[in-house]
Length: 553
Image (tube, rainbow, N blue to C red; front, top):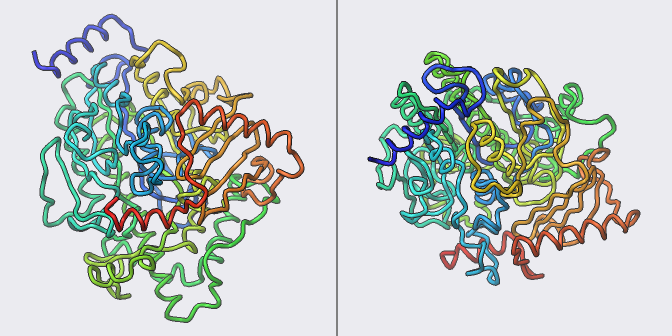
């Protein structure tokens, strides 16, 4: 018997034995929910309307209004480590992504936990598939390119993916000199892209097709929709860009102020919280041409975000039309903070040669756009720093979970959460088996007590640590001890009270040395337990990226 048939037979037996909780839903056994996990790439904390932004994101905001909005959710500082934690529930060093392959320090090469691909930890897809779920993926993978590392070998029954960390959104074209070429696969088969390819539309269409193909066979589904958006290059259909013409003419300082006021109004920011040091040049010091180009760069980004929102709306309406919406847990999250890197300044010849950089074509097919630190700081309002940093601006992300059949509607939680919590949460909600009976089988913990309002804190009295590319953080209660490598910091440890000072503006390390020592001891335990190979003292993220690109990683 084929493996799919075996799995369906096992699931049928288990359903008949009433081993799963809940109320019967259409198209699958009693109470086993469908799961749709939607991940966006490099989208900032405040870009959504429900988190204070001005971008039109009505569909995603409706998910928040109909579910849980989390305001203290943490990822890794970079995309591939976050994805490894998301899909396994493990620390990134345990899963094989101790650092991005693009950023590996010389002393990390060849070390256990730094393989640059998933190294054998079972994925949520594999665990759910073994318990009778259909498992689908569409989008960016970035967790291994060889045949035995692609999603089809990691528990996904159906998949269409970009193997690399990013790419052009209109054609099969590398966006960076770090990739000589890009590789798209459906299952294990390389594919050509359609002539009308736009990444967000393509992945949405594929996911809906996978869902429809097995919608009536009695098995629930797990769908992982990992958009390339809104990773650079920022590109969108022209009509979506035009909707934001002149919206950003006032500049990043003014728009950031508007978002902060909005966050105060909706209760996401405590009164009196300090504003972090502004990023990017003084808007008033820019020339008129520089302002015009910068404003359009943000308009392109906003159009790209709105296209994602429109696509989420398509999915919701499709599920509703198929009578599947109420039986589907929908999660929406970003993988890290907004991207501040200015690759055009690092590799000017590459972009001048391969892309149309004109104002008129910005965001369209053939163009390249990135928005730099000024707009990245707006995306991460109210926090300091960006993607790549262990500061909150690098690792604080939006998370929305909708499942009104079981969870309260319109709730907001400020409990500390990690992206590693999602796998154990979904396994519990699905009634699926963990890879081990050991309650410590995962780094993450189940969020179900929060979602069912039986608890308001999952880690009372415990510390939580993480590290990637020299940036490290240790959380203990309201406090955070943090260290950043250049260009995001100077390797010095600093202490912040995040409850009073979420923007990390007041360093308390000199006032509370005992707490610093305790949190540093917790970090040392984390390093030993997870096989962390610390970067050398002269490591800098941007310099290592350039070095690795020049030698082909």
